[in-house]
Amino acid sequence: MEEEIIKFENVWKVYSIGKIKLPILKGITLSIKKGECLSIIGPSGSGKTTLLNLIGCLDKPSEGKYFMEGEEISSLSDDKLSEIRSRKIGFIFQSYNLIPQLTVLENIGLPLFYQGIDEKIIKEKSLKLAETVGLKHRINHKPTELSGGEQQRVAIARALINDPILILADEPTGNLDTKTGKEIMELLVNLNKEGKTLLVITHDMTIASYTKKIVRILDGKIINDN
Image (cartoon, rainbow, N blue to C red; front, side, top):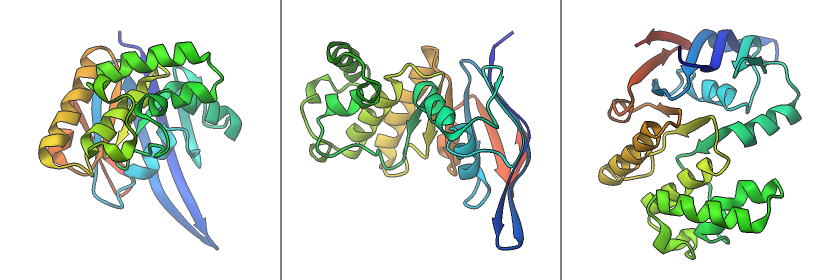
């Protein structure tokens, strides 16, 4: 039986605006198994960004339980969630979020630098990952000297540096042309084939179709899970 790494049990997220309660997620139950390749697809306003924030430990549920690797983390402190986030989840964003002053190699190794890891180890791991994403020839370039596709490859390498249990990609091709977007999705799917658990958040069925499993969300509820 495959190991379950993420589990939501009847999770709600409700925001309060004055005296008004605004439910964004309404009783989400979801399971992600180790090595799975899945996407969560929904239109703008469906609740997928809120769901991403909860899965990524950027926010906490209002109600319900969230388990990661069997441990309930719904009610942990912000500091503890921050630690889990930095060590167990690799984020890939639409806007790359690279630091312009740093080289490709330095951007890739940044999460380990923040953890105080030895510089030699950081360089070795960063070089290996630069090669994995096809950027070994660009390691001394700055983000402004790279194409959008190359910048996203740097972001993917950075997401992998901590050997996370989950790669969480939020609209990873949103700023890319169709051809480059296809290359990025193929790279992510290949990483999944090598054993990485991949979750893609998207509004685009073309992107979702790269994953083996598609979960649809609408009006804060999962409407099918295939």
